[in-house]
Image (cartoon, rainbow, N blue to C red; front, side):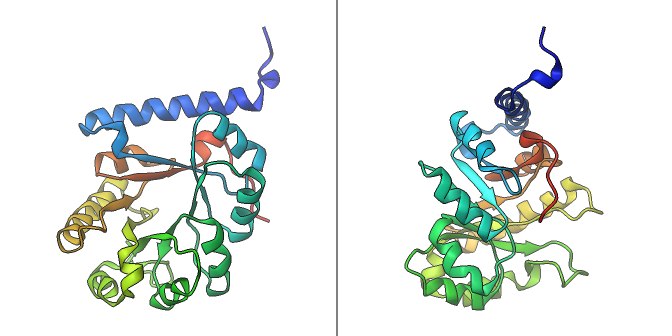
Length: 232
């Protein structure tokens, strides 16, 4: 019998992914949902391109990155039919590069950024980030009370490519409470803006709750790839 240290990285990631998929399946069953209603985004930030290549080999096609430099490099190194998701804080000077490699941007929260994206030859699709911590204006995202006005002020071409809302559950709040609030907010937005129907919520520590509350996209890193390396 091989020792634990002899387990290959492919075997490790494959085992972790199988466990995550099993948990996803259980949550979907509880929520009476079909697998086709959910997109799993493997968050590969800080992990090597070789790990992303393993995930591709295992059948995943949606990958998430939080830093433009890393996403741009990996998209070039991997190629293939990969759908790249940018999930980090948008910086104005990075928008031309982000637009080049990212199919989706999950963190649109400033009208000035929307206008700058509009100037790019490749226009991504957008999730509007919502700030669930009303007492923390330093956090990224549009406040829930200002969301309708933000959507109404979007340039027409950006509005047409807005596909959903995104949020991160506050650390000091139960995920069920945070995601329940997002589900209610999402339903309200969909009623007025049918195209903005997606809901990007849920990460490694809370994705089952997110699924039960209607997430269409979940962003999972450490549960699949293991402990995250420190950012450099």
